[in-house]
Each structure stands twice: as structure tokens, then as C-alpha cells.
Length: 227
Image (cartoon, rainbow, N blue to C red; front, side, top):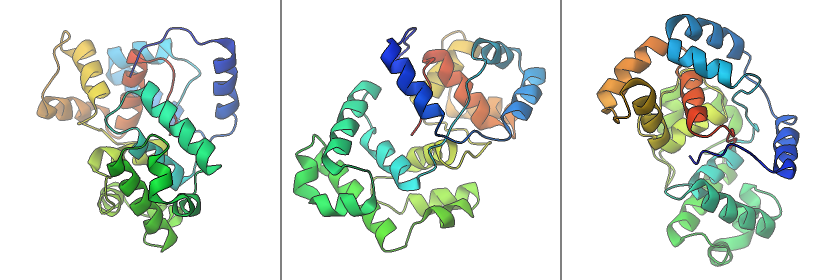
């Protein structure tokens, strides 16, 4: 995540417009109140980012496709490739991905591997192996198991889906570099902690670990990301 202090007015307007079309988590205020009493560091972050929260666009395929596009590249590069993909497809649906085909998708700047991942993801939605309704009814670990059966989706991508699409409140993505950096900055004098240490710290945030994670991300980049 890249820290940006200011956005051009047009970009701000786009962010506001997008936020008007998304769903806010019902538990957000309760989570902030409870975490504020447990963790002074998080309490300061809450005060610094008043009025912002995790949001979901509500479309499972869109979230997963965007996560695949963004794997192992910068946010800026991912945005550029994603925008080209949207312009090419018109809209991001399993049918549009199937209609484009692998060769056309590769021409839009996607690596061959990511093309294969997107096509496999589209096939899972088109044949009914995956659906928004089915995933919404599963527990967190069951969702992860279902999603990691798709080529190119590992635990990190599945955790991003739990946080950004299903708005699950208690997800701690230990393999996320941004979270590792933020925890190191705020709790360990800039030293990146081991996964075990992060997990132990996260136990103090249950059942609101997604909320803590989201605000720690904001400490690195004040502009919220919505998949």
C-alpha cells in the first residue's frame, strides 16, 4: 500500500460516488467502541480516520477477479491493468470473461498465468460450483476451502474476499505485507514481527480482527481500497 496524503478533486469525487453505492457493515460502531477500550494504538487510528469504514461492492466475482489481477503487483499497476480489462470487457462478469477468451485477455496486459486464473474462476461461477449465495452461507474457513479450490486463489486472496466482499468481522490476514508492516510500525518499533507474534497480538482484537486490520492498513494508506 502506498501512502498518499492528498487526492485530486476528481479522484475524491470518484471515491465519494463509489462509497454511496456500497454497503456498510452493521457491526462497525460496536467494534470501534470495544477495541478502543482494549488498545490505545487502535483508538488513535480510529480518531484519525473518523467517517471511513470497510465497504463492499457486493459482487463476488468482481471481488475475486480484482484480487487475482492485483496479485504480486503494486496498487497503481493493478489499477491500470484492471481499468484496461474493464474497458475491454465492458463489465466484469463470468460470461464476459468467457466471451473474451484467453488470447484477448492476454492482450490487455494480464500475464498468461492470471489469464488462466480468471478463466478458471469464471468457469467455477458459470457451472455453479461457486455462487455469491452459496459463499454467504458458509463459515470463514469453509469459504477459504471453497475458494482455494480455484486456480490462482490462495489463502490471502480468500481472506481478502472474506473482508472486502462478505464483510466478515474477524479475519486476520497474517500473510498480508501491509498488515505486517503496520503492526511492526505501531507495536514493535518498526521491526516486522513473526506470524506467531502477530497472531498472539490479534487474539486481543477478537472478534473484530478485520476492523483492526482495516485501520492498520489506513495508517499506511489513508485512501480506502474497495475490491
